[in-house]
Length: 295
Ligand code: ZEM
Image 1 (spheres, rainbow, N blue to C red):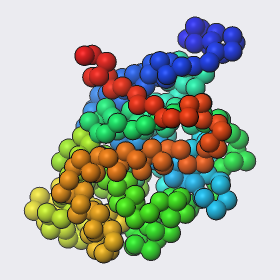
Image 2: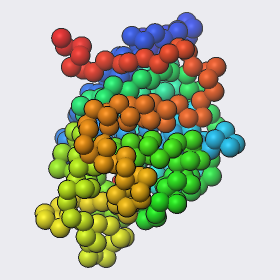
Image 3: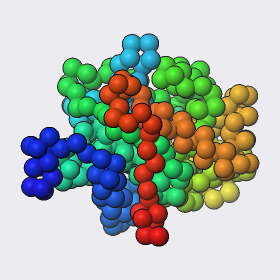
């Protein structure tokens, strides 16, 4: 709006309250999904925040959420990002209203809002990302390939600076959303409540019997009982690799532990590639949910 743009012209320095307004608008947009995927854009918006951050390479300091490089064609067209135009277009509407926010801050704040509004843990977040250029686009192939095994998962996430415990915690995001044949080629949801943040992903991994689905698509598993849920090969690996399994079992047994560990690992993910001196606040903020603000 004109008021928001005017703020830029007068050297507007946004406060936590201004970011809370953006959060609230994101929450509205996520919920206003009509018939789209169980009536929520939350999962696809969360996936945008993850893919925008998960390109980080700690050895070279390249990639990550700082420059929001998925705005540029080379990265928007990376195979792993198929379908994320849906989330980027939603965020573009919000960017028009709050022109002072950087895309990297907007997309990561949206990831936080998605998790929190879908009943997940509070995720500490702070602003400071800046918009970069096409020259900052990281090479293709930095995000995980769902058809691979434990060595690949470790290669990808160790490159970002995560350990086995953090890897397993982060993958619990697959409680949310689904696979789309026209995006990744895979098909179906992981849980029965794909718009609710729960530890059901781990529970289902251990409690259901998983069998290879017989179909023309890429190799994926289905639950033998209902044949309505799916697991990617990389999901199933969390029950097969000894170290991953230890954490997956712990998260299946203890939802509070999962929430705590997911929050910490996800907050870390969202800050990958952002130089510390760019952050406005020395300590990250806890943004309020829409429900918090009602009471
Ligand atoms: Zn995902 N993910 N992911 N993921 N992901 C998909 C969907 C979603 C992997 C992967 O290949 C895929 C993390 C880790 C890993 C979400 C969040 C997070 C899809 C389906 C695939 C194929 C895309 C489609 O067809 O629409 C692999 C291999 C991973 C690690 C080994 C992490 C970490 C995440 C967040 C913290 C979410 C929310 C979705 C659902 C998107 C939607 O549109 O419903």
